[in-house]
Image (tube, rainbow, N blue to C red):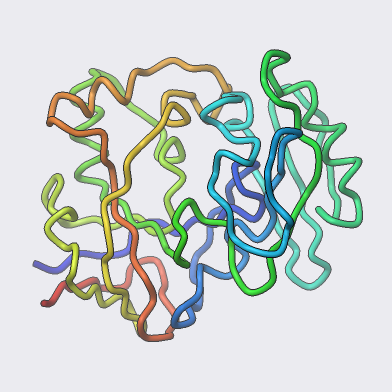
Length: 248
């Protein structure tokens, strides 16, 4: 079956905002450019800032749902990001050079009974994905619509924090792609594994409030997975509207 690219998203600061793109160039063996380039470590984190570490070391939507309502716009030339949130003033900064300003801005969004945000890290050469390999997350609109139907109302796509959204496939068809190759535009990706979801998806990305039990909805199908992780095996540009094919 052939589908199309419906949406492309990147998240310059892990768990702190998303940005829509019309196109992106993927590089073999790397994460999406500027996706999770920075991450905000909390005060209980165990890391040296030099290598990948699990998501439990970072401030994230699973523990701080208000973070889910952040939007971001990156200026690649200056590496500055403009952050917006319904309850905070807009802020433009460089995540490393202006780390204290970022921590001050996000402090009111953090639950007081959780470890507080403490520092910003950037690991050379890769984004801080939830996988210990450089991954690109891929979701389908069909599976999203299935969850909407189970819950009984519309859901924003950005609950799932995906990189590439595909249209034209059947619900949950993407789970059959593990071990196969996805061809999108000029690029190719090997699908590695399913994505197991957390409480972050229960928060509304417009408000930052938990208002939909997405995990219980997924339980209806006997799992809590949504989307798949891929590894870029062939560099190339992908654009919204590009054809998508799957092969063994």
